[in-house]
Amino acid sequence: MIAPTSFFSDYGGHIRILEETRALQARGVEVAIVTYYKGNDVPGLDIRRTVPLPWHTDYEVGSSRHKLAFDAYLAAKALAEARRFRPDIIHGHMHEGALIGGAPARLLGVPLVFDFQGSLSAEMVDHHFLDPQGAFYPWVYRLESAITRRLPDAILTSSGRAAALLRDDFAVPPERIHALPDCADPAHFDPARFPFEPADHPLRTQYGIPREAVVVGYLGLLTDYQGVPHLIEAAARLKAAGQPIHFLVMGYPNVESYQMSAHAWDVADRVTFTGRVPFDDAPYYLAAADIAVTAKMSTTEGSGKLLNYMAMAQPIVAYDTPVNREYLDDLGVYAPAGDVTAFTEAILALAGDPARRRLLGRELRRRAQEQFSWAAATDRILGLYQHLTKQDS
Image (tube, rainbow, N blue to C red):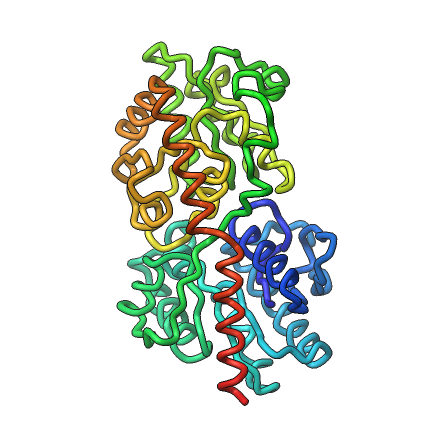
């Protein structure tokens, strides 16, 4: 696997890479992950890192010019490790992983699988790194198109919406597209592991959250792109309405910046920021919430956090996007994308209806167990691997 990111960190696509790897290992597949020099090691995983950059080694990886240097180093490392490891399959995550994986796949004569987690150009626009009306946008779009159409033998997509995007916008032949939605581990994310009600959760005492408050939980990256400003604004609206609703915002980075924003909105007493939560501790932290939320508005990227919320039997308020509908179906409590007023009203309605919260939570956990299990997903990945290697030989 080629992971063009600082693997492992406790969020987003990193969770997909981790869970895919563990599931494949459990089925007897030997997996080596080639990634940046930054990131946390994970027991039991074979992680092979690049050497550090010769300048400013503390950069956070993201959409920036420094990522070009990270990827150049990763390309060299991937080629060296491919020669050493002699893989049967090269599995590239994200567009950079597929691009970097193209050379060693051709050199060794092995298939390349592209794990597509959202549109490259759309993500760069969402992160305000690329102007959709600017001179560079057409070039990035052409690069994205070339990667998706010419390099991989097969593409795994994290959502049906992403599959439609590849087929309709990038003219990828349908037979090369294979849906593999994000999944959850219902044994790890299991509310039965925590035999107390959310109101009695030790975290409430630790963070000074009133026992009688309804706690709205968010766990993920803290960025504008993930809708964190909308959570703070919703907290302000609910406080102004005199509602005893508290937001538990779990994750990183930018914690201090959003704490300042909460002070500016006069909701520092209604929004608690925990900072980074290790993945192994995520179920414990989520168990403190009565309601889970996501304010992400992307129409192409997956939203794996929803699966963890679902497995924890938590009712979910989300913006009404195709990706969120794919995960939650009619069990989500929706607001029009970007409408903070409607988002706040959806939270308020659910906060006042404990019976509905319990019902939705039970049904969402059942849905996660039945339709988003890693056992079924691993069968699909292995079936694809076997098909490609037989076809290649």
